[in-house]
Length: 294
Image 1 (cartoon, rainbow, N blue to C red):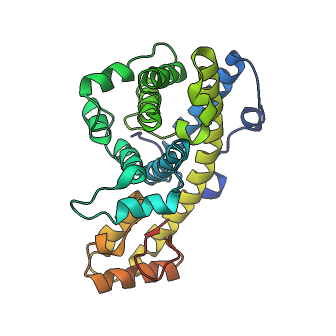
Image 2 (image 1 turned 180 degrees about the horizontal axis):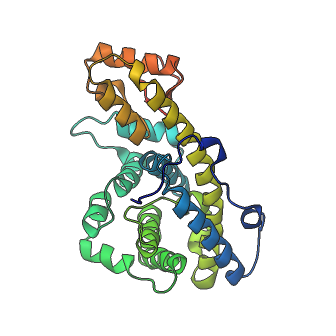
Image 3 (image 1 turned 180 degrees about the vertical axis):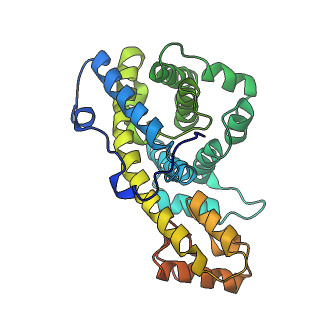
């Protein structure tokens, strides 16, 4: 999503939250929930347009959470930390395994502007014509289109939860005029909801979007503060290539020292320095094979 907006720097502790009247409702008619999810989506649209909100990083973090949800739907035990490892420590020629493949699919889905080609990169086992058919399976309002895309995929491939949810979020983004996927449905929807159809599925999607909206607002505030702090300490970093390294931390869910544009020892020192400055966190709790991020 690319928007031209005024500078809101210095306003990070007052990022607008979803109104309580949106989040306090637990049940209602389809019409009621459609209104509330619409309010939530409009709020997210404005929030993600702010210059001080690290949208690329948020999409990457949401992609990891969506992957974790889809892995859970499939009955596998891997959680976020294991999914990170499965992706970030892949070597050329390595196979990621089922859970890692799910994580890679979501990661690739958010990396590039929304298109059939980009979705094909995320979902290489699907033909472009099939992706296009499912993406445009729905008509009407954005959430209705997303629900109908989700239903269309699961009708033909009942066990393809991850591709179905990627395409549902893609249909939602396309209907909203967003240029990239923002993973919203997977983390908010329940496994039992994926077996619903018609109005029941649309109702479940509205509820999922409201639940995800709450989490995205919280995540946005947290990552915006962390990004602002990282930018503030960047001038203190003397290592050659530190500027490029900081940009990687601002746009990626996690970074391995070996991926930084510095020699190995310098990269590890830079990561330790950023941790000492409170600008990034070590994400694994390990002594070796570490990953760092906001």
